[in-house]
Amino acid sequence: MMRPANVASVSISTVVEFLQAFGAAHAAVTSPLPEDTDVAVSGVSIDSRTVQPGDLYIGLPGARSHGAEFAPQAVEAGATVVLTDDAGARRLGECGVPVLVGTSLRSAVGPLSRLIFQSQPAGVQRPKLFGITGTNGKTTSTYLLDSLLRALENDTGLIGTIEILAGEESIPSQLTTPESPQIHGLLALMRERGLSAASMEVSSHAITYRRVDGVKFDVAGFTNLTQDHLDLHGDMEDYYQAKAALFSRERARRAVVAVDDEWGRRLASETMIPVTTLSGSGMSADWTIPEVQPVGTGNRFVLHGPHGVRLQCHIPAPGAFNVMNAALAAVMVHESGVPAGRIQEVLDAADPFSVQVPGRMEVVGSAPAAIVDFAHNSDALERTLQSVRTPQESGRVIVVFGATGERDQGKRTVMGAIAARNADVVIVTDDDPHDEDAASIRAEVFEGADTARRDGGLSCELSNVAPRAAAIEAAVEMATRGDVILVAGRGHEVWQEVNGVNLPLDDRVELRAALQKHGFTPAGAERIES
Image 1 (tube, rainbow, N blue to C red):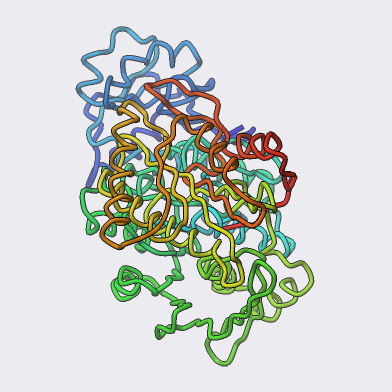
Image 2: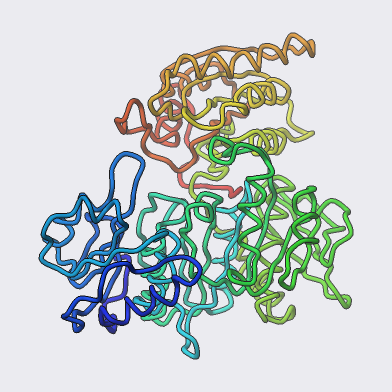
């Protein structure tokens, strides 16, 4: 499901020649060329569990073991060649297939996958590829982009946090951005199926771990940068550099960059590829949003572009951040070569920004308003809380949320403080503790909320409730029909990881059940995107 049905195989000698040429900067094959140079390779895998007959299996060092240790399973599954490093070669016994040994192989995986899968061949019709990165808004912007491209009569593909789409076929996602052999396999599958456009979320993990190596985007988009993932990056500078690496000549042809934060402005000034800027806050930019009019739960807005171009847009989702998500999608499509007049035609006729995004401001009940959202960092939580409190509403805002274990610990107290400042009732609970003590995580979040409450003289109610299902029910039990319940942090996720065990947990299911139990009517399948 993650690769094309038909791949023109390459010989082992071609693989060796590629690695030797690539090795001038990154890698070198140190073992002699096997006598049998007619061995065919038709796929790539770095996971022995995903090997298919004809694959090149690449055994790389991992956090707990070396991939070469699983070479026997890969060969049993049909691998025709094994590629590993010196440490892996020492672990190998007799494999029964040719073994190639190289250095710095992680940097070769993406380009080698591109070669074997022929994912983006020169001079061949292939999907126009869009990539979106940033801290918040990647998923929603990608769905909005995909919806607009479909309205423009494209057959589309999508690679993201929630799912992978190759036309109408949906494949559940395990990573925001899959490993590079899967990426190149998917791009080749999309080309094989004749898709004309594809959209991809590109996380900082994907760039850091080289999952998008060998991929070239026609248009790359940047949403924003706020504190997150510092467990990986250490500080905001390293986090920025990871994001900025997408906007290089090797990875993208053009860029659309939102410049409402300092990181976006820096990126726009530093990138060496053609860049178009976008602002929704009055900053100087190529595209601006001077006109926003509330309509129902969402907004109508006008995008002003170069040479007097205007696009009139509508998005039914609340919040200024959703206006920016939609604007980014529209400008990226325009930068890909679609005339503004054609974009306006489909905006008027198809209302493409009304697309439903699972777990992003998903409305589960209307009285009280009961909403599930993926907001899982400080900036996203603050924006979401502000978007659900409108001037005409007199009810309380009740928020249920927690923080993820074994991740950026610095944001826990910050998120607690943000909740206390923006909600009337704060219920701290568990997110995914992973292997960390759940009570300790809750205590840190609670401390942040309690400190903000005391220092700011705030009147919000504050409690610590676990497990998460009980916290959701507690929120519903105290709610009146005029209140807003926001369950934040997990969105579309259906498993909670606790001490290495995945426990079934879907915030939408728990919230719907609690509403029914306490005499409220769930809102069915109605959704608002964020």
